[in-house]
Image (cartoon, helix red, strand yellow):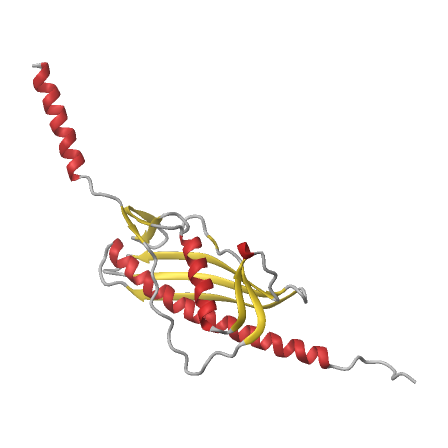
Length: 216
């Protein structure tokens, strides 16, 4: 009798183990940068990209989704292979480097001082599944500053949405890949433009005569 019970329990456990779905790890992959209508102007300045920060809920390894307004959850067996803040920061640095808009682009870990500093914060990144199959939403804020002048050059809030092909985690990942690619294109263009305007302003300010009496 005891042997029968033990075998039954072992069989049940084996069945549970065999039907348990394995954890799936996804990599956030963005499409190539969109072609520019005109070559990016090359700035003589060095851009320092600070590590991207993120809202703690969206910076989890689990992929976030929303099944109803005001409600957020995480997919249980689908996760990011790398925390979103780390992955987004790496993709952003790569995109800025490839744009050729700056003399050089460096990360904070490179120990380089930049004449411009870019800080980014990932506020939202999730699958909006309130409809079927739904869409994805990414919100990221950026602040470009000039430490030499102790000034903020510009700040912007980027909001990008994209449809998903299927109402599941795999579809969410594909949608987020596309949306993040669009956001990075917008962010690179904005950073280059803000840097160019900042350089022009600084040059004008430097060239402006100082008011007062002329020397004898």
